[in-house]
Length: 213
Ligand SMILES: O=C(O)c1ccccc1N[C@@H]1O[C@H](COP(=O)(O)O)[C@@H](O)[C@H]1O
Image (cartoon, rainbow, N blue to C red; front, side, top):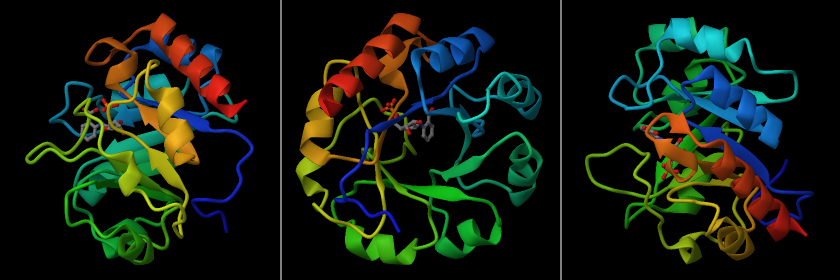
């Protein structure tokens, strides 16, 4: 099984918080590997099931459709799941909750001071990857803030998706420092919350490709 620290072909890229069909098209055209849709109503990037269905239908084969949830009602997950390939749990969901859903999932962990990453990797052993995000009390994610990347161990029992405050300007440095399996960005490719900027998306992908070569 792939672990953090193994040699990787290239850094995968997830763009998150898409709400508009033109942004989905631009993200796919730019070369994103995965697109994220926020199904948490507290977000300024939230989409409902109807909008998710419309956006998801535009995504071609081999681009992963990811649904982002924060401590969701299982009924919401069940109704969204038919439009998704992967679930991203971004709240305080337990391993038992994530596993009970019965679909491929990743777990977001906010890098609070006392977080024990090797232990979390053991606890969430059934996750397809761990997504590491900045910690701001009272905010579940999407803060636009970075964290201290040196806190990520060189090897970990799960693939790492690096998130939190990434932009076209710092993506290459982040990749050189962490060598993650993937990077995830939302605010750093936006003109406004939920409104992506095609040029920033293309610039972000270029920065990642540069870092990989
Ligand atoms: O984007 C949101 O509104 C959001 C809300 C609740 C949890 C997570 C959220 N976004 C995710 O947070 C990280 C980092 O985002 P950013 O690049 O710092 O803006 C990323 O996974 C977003 O998808």
